[in-house]
Length: 187
Image (cartoon, rainbow, N blue to C red; front, side, top):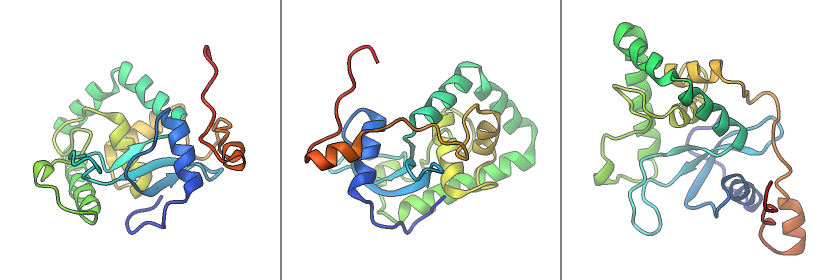
């Protein structure tokens, strides 16, 4: 887990993130969390993209296995349970509100964007609408920083302590002087 300021982003990390996402990584300002093998798991993205688009999702879950696990939990209706918990438990609600403020403070270190002022991610501070975003924040900020993100990670079949990374092929691509190879159809 890493919060701002971040180490400079290595080209190899950008190649891995691009392979994870299946598209070119854009406007990455830091690697906020890593797998035990060292591969990026959460990227921090500039609050305003190079094309001028406001981008509120500062912490972005890039690891395919983690993303799939959060998608599974969303399909299993964990967000409904989390929203009920927010309304029923004042301590969880207060922790989630603090997570929202911390998220905004982390993002503000990379510039204020008026169009997204006060908007964090994942529905914070009053509802849960994206487990990917709150889990990414929990991974970046560490245990206890986002109670809903922590809950999603605890319920997940994925853990950052066990490597589930694919061979992203980035070292072969770098040696060849090119981009990561495209996946074969049907894979």
